[in-house]
Amino acid sequence: MLSKKDINHLTNLARIGMDDKNKESEEKTLGDLGRILEYFDELKEVDTESVRPMEGGTSLEDVYRNDEVEKKFNTEASVGQFPESESGFLKIPPVFSDE
Amino acid sequence: MKESSSIRSLNRQFIKKEVSVREATEGYYKKIKKEDEAIGAFLSLMEEQALLEADRVDKKIKDGENIPLLAGIPVALKDNILVKGFSATAASRSLERYVASYDATVVEKLKEQHVVLVGKTNLDEFAMGGSTENSGFHITKNPYDIERVPGGSSGGSAAAVASGFVQVALGSDTGGSIRQPAAFCGIVGLKPTYGSVSRFGLIAMASSLDQIGPLTQTVEDAAIVFDAIKGEDPMDSTSVSLGGINTVSTNVERVKKLRIGIPKEYFVDGMEKEVTDEITRTIEKFKKAGFSVREVSLPHTKYALSCYYIVMPAEVSANLARFDGIRYARLPAVSAEAEKAGHSALSEIYFRQRGGGFGSEVKRRVILGTFVLSSGYYDAYYAKAQKVRRLIADDFKKAFEEVDVLLAPTTPTRAFKIGEKTNDPISMYLSDIFTMSVNLAGIPALSLPVKKYPLDGGELPVGFQLIGKHFHESDVLGLGMWYEKN
Picture (tube, rainbow over the protein chains, first blue to last red):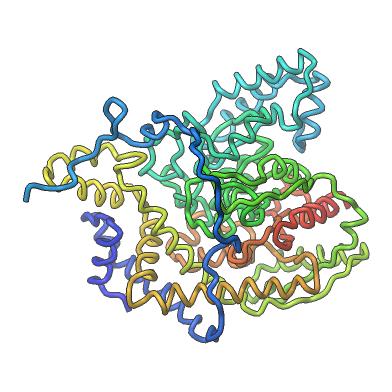
């Protein structure tokens, strides 16, 4: 069963900040996830010994295309996907720190 | 505008100049502005652009040009589908300030037909939910009873069509999100085969399950819209070419030969009596008309919910990683807070954007998905679910050796009350119990009302679904059209 420590670890992995408001609902999250995982227990009774996993929604394999340059979007449209930019470049905070 | 219109009847009125596209468009906006405050179907309107397009179509008609069947038809889009230059929020506060910089392929195709794009409709945040109560902005109400939910996640699209705000809406269906709201709102909804319609420009939720499809007043309208949006797209490598299959011109002789199967697992305890009664009556109608109807079994149906709620959150946790505050949009408060944090600004942005911008259901699914994929639990949950998914898909394959189409209820109950299930995720998840297997198997399904329900008739709609073989949309649409006419 999940503990509060597990939830902290998972929210950390998923980069979800838990501020005080979120902390309040931590108990509920824990309870809800516990009940959901308990529900999943029913899968244990299914014999899947020799079953090939279904890894996606399609049976297509190795979809190829010709390696041709295609100008579908201009730079503007791509840069436009970012909240911050400067003269056609993306603006992001520093990735590496001095420490 | 007549209450029960169709694409063909609107098209005829335009061509005969009984009404101009501009007049019709203005009429729809007038209705929306008067009535949508009580329903809450829309998140944003595109009036200026819509009227420009209306004028363009009117000019074509005036010049004696032939116009496509869909030209001038008012269409709404679920707000997780991108239209260049317009916001696409997926009903998430985290994307409140995001403006799409390109068109989704389905939008490109509709624009080629000169439809009038009316606005963007409400949904459960990132399409996660079955009631549209999880929207980050407002709740949408069921036009048949405003104390009830319209279903979800395409609840805004369903409510808009049912209210007559638009003729057609597009939605997306990952576990029932087109069919369940269509059933709750007494309209038609088609979830196409996985690969039939390009998802390029759809904000992805669970990529092995997501499909875009139409919500409409009639089955024929659904077929017309499906024909317009289907087909291979180099921008979505899971899409396939359907050749020249025309789903609209369905041959009655061929339809009458379709063998119908009734999956016995879709009639369970706890179903609402009204639903069971109506579905039984519907089956009788098909029998009386001379269709071959027999019972079939899909033995792994009872495991679909567990399987779905492992596979889907796993994909959600990966797909939603892109909403990190660096790409797409950032909450206004986040930049200022991150500035203060100095050297660790980047990770501060991630945590604050996702912590502050995602609602509780979205967080729950991201956390659950991260868990089922994490080392030590992967085999017990994710790998196991993928195998069970195969068994569920094989059930359908086996049933389709005996029959051509399956008939089942779309939902176990009619539209439930607002607030009834918000505190209990499992009971909310169970409202999609009859729809999610179809997504796991990747096959097409059409939901349609068992009969016509007038908006002020005081009756809550019941819907049933016709489930077909891979890429046999023409079967379910053809059979649906037959039912509607008889």
